[in-house]
Image (cartoon, rainbow over all chains, first blue to last red; front, top):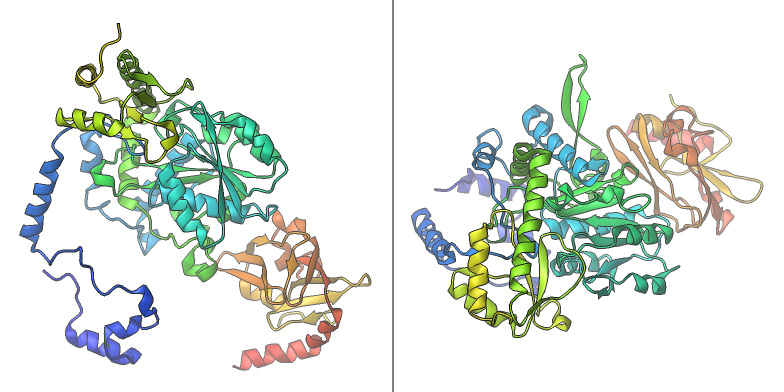
Length: 453
Length: 132
């Protein structure tokens, strides 16, 4: 069924009106060297019935494995009410409304989303969401370079234990603007504070601090934040929002707190679903809000004094600011952000804390049991939140392969991203991994590794 | 009709310029410009020490309905900025030629000031714009 209402006649009339003979001519200004002839890897068009069947077959190949994989996206329990409410007709749109103020309900949801994220991060102003954690981090770097007007360097310090995916996406998004990421090495699974002395007095626009880090460990956020501010750099805090239910929020790091916080929102009620759609969040201090990308909903009163919701600070946005807008982000992940708002509402502060504590407890149980096996040890002594790195005596891929045959996704192989750590594997046990689930993993692992005497 | 002070020179982008005794140039936007923008809610000033070329976007004036760049009309180094605008951007509306000044520039070459309009020329320029 075609969903495009224009007839051939309509299209011909529009083309004639702008003075071109066919649609392809509109793309003439894109150099031939940048175009591809065809999408060879994409198969021929399928009917709805065919594509539906194809996707169901694909989904079945996933099976229903026990998941101990984290590394940026997490398998949490999602209350049934979350998506039942989120997919109601009134909410079921991926977009912020075009006639925004006529959609008070949608604006109110976004406003509440912003309020919850501001509260979790301990900062002043949240936007209405971004695409995902990685692009949120890249946008935060761009924002920091704009906002830190004392700095002229366009350099940003990023710890090696900040997600390799985030660093890679940021490099792509920042490279064109000649912004450079300078990596800080780790020691025992956290950023090596002693290295900071080498950079004292140098000009950096910002530092990124991920806590918990990509490797699950807890950074010395206070020391890093205070060092950055003393050296004229802004602080971008990257955090898993579930962890913020129990950890010190970025707004309270060090003496003055982080200036911007961002991260991946998927843990808040969004299914893993093969990698997306997820959503990114971003929150900042009032002082830098005019450099923030994305939409912001505010609460106000109308001419009769009745409360209402409205888009605010739109002068930053591209429909007004054109090429000098803070970002090309305009719409956002409205639907998934709505689901996250419902998830947070249902759990409440106490529920989120319980989820966070259970994740931490389950991962501790798993790590304690696995490290009793010969050839398995903890890679670092640094405390962790709900993920930990295990050092194995053999290639991680072999172990994951053997566990997979038993229906267990045993963790994340770090050998690609951190080859210097040898056979290192990142494991995670969220709140939905039961005692029996963890026992199944340990039993399967015990077939591979001998139990220590 | 907006006020045009005869103490200043004017650019086609509706900035006013005043050559001070110490050789520096103070800049702001004309009464006509502030009227056209409407009530200002935010002014972003340049940084002291910024080296600007003629035509560089160097400041932003944001009203409730739009944000506009201010383009530096002549090359030079920023010597001073009006910090009061951070908390009271409405100074530009209430006093565009006095308290609402935006920044002071040490020009590379003050002779380029000859290229700008005096009050009479600016007045004719505004009249032309209105006729169009």
